[in-house]
Image (cartoon, rainbow, N blue to C red):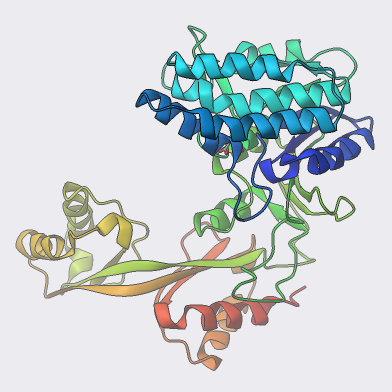
Length: 437
Ligand code: ASP
């Protein structure tokens, strides 16, 4: 077995007890040589993430308000962990310096990145590993995205034996200014490191044993997902069902590195494996997920199919209103455009009147209250009878299907239903496929 990159999320490193679990996990296997920590997260529901405390301190300092109180929480957390683990680390000195930096106007990204930086120092000391400063190896290009040269730089820096700790969430621009990824971005660092060192597996340690095939608030006994492909997870993530940062998928996907989502609190659970391909014969369905709060613009015009440029003009009008759309299933003389309510804002009536003016359809209406449900599984739509089973299940549950969009990706059947039918529809679909093999 080759090298493993282990990324630990904030809840996995929230206090000394959690950090001890992480250390035990890393030390259990010699292949776990590359460790990417997040900043300490919430210890319980009422708690605050270290990263949020840092943003708060930065904002208060910017407004020239005393940061003594929030900074004392930060200090207590890091000093508490360092002392409890008995580490030989001048944490007090590092924190005093940080306070000076914040008060002297250090940048937002610099301040936000310190949670990962300090946690990285802690883990490196606890694991007796080499600490690698992300600002020296993770470079952002002019466009604000990762400079691909970073991969070589990381590979060089992480060569040699022993363990390495590289904090998540940040790197630096060409001039050395610290820059963070978007929130939750330690997942991205882990993926970048995994690709740079051509890891065998990227283990992403969190507080759940992987993904479930449906939201447990809707399907209380939803089964765990043991294997899922990059493509499937992308479709489910779009519907909000994800335990992994969207942008983190790309580096590992390009290199074909499997991602294993695992639970720091139940390290023996196998978790979910995200793979380039999976064995479809075991389970056709990868998952079912959905979201409410969509509207459907429905347009009807006789001979629409023969009117050149009709669809393009509809989409142009939508774009001119500065609205982006999600899907556009169409019929012979009809066209529907599904738009999320957030995106639509208060622009609905204006959009309808513009469509009337520009396209003079026979009918145009904007139907609110739509929920979209994605039934995802690679190869599902290749198989005869899958769609029939899905729609029969919805009919049995007395769910009225307002719109269907299978698209050409062949891995996702999307149905639109009344928001009130949403949970019933998800349950019906899940039951229809749960034992599929
Ligand atoms: N600590 C950062 C955040 O809270 C990054 C991360 O945890 O991945 O967003």
